[in-house]
Length: 222
Image (cartoon, rainbow, N blue to C red; front, side, top):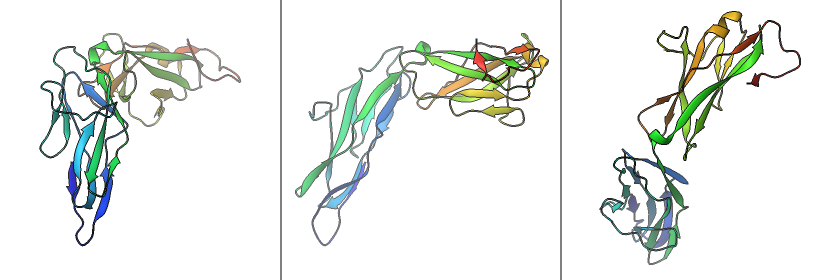
């Protein structure tokens, strides 16, 4: 947080930085919520909870820092912070402005399941492999990379987003100009959460390649 006074005349608070609408917290890392405002005299920054009550430091749960930021520590082990909501409030004698609410959600990677699902596709067509994420918190996960494993004993290697392979924006991999050889390869997705450092890799899956192209039909997941 920081707040700045404007010389020469009085002015009410103007928020120039507020927390995002959703904040993710893992059980191993903390997060700092920041808020900033302009005004004269310099606005005072405070934080409020879901019902508008003033937020105070509480050991192990949250800490209001000297600079006005709100620090939310990680939770040891597999613990979970109760779903909660915070807003920052900037105040001087002219008035008060309140930020949008940020909802705090705890992400526990060990509770997340990830699997890859592959479509049926005819030779020469476009195969589709989707990365499905399940668990209490399925939002915020993105595909860090797609992997190709040529045989069950081979080491999975990253697939470039180029040539026959196209990374879709919805956790989807498109495989163009499919051949019979693609039926013997294994595809895996590796996901990462914006709040977590450790990626999670799915189990492998394979395309079902048919001898003839599928006519007038989009790729279908089995």
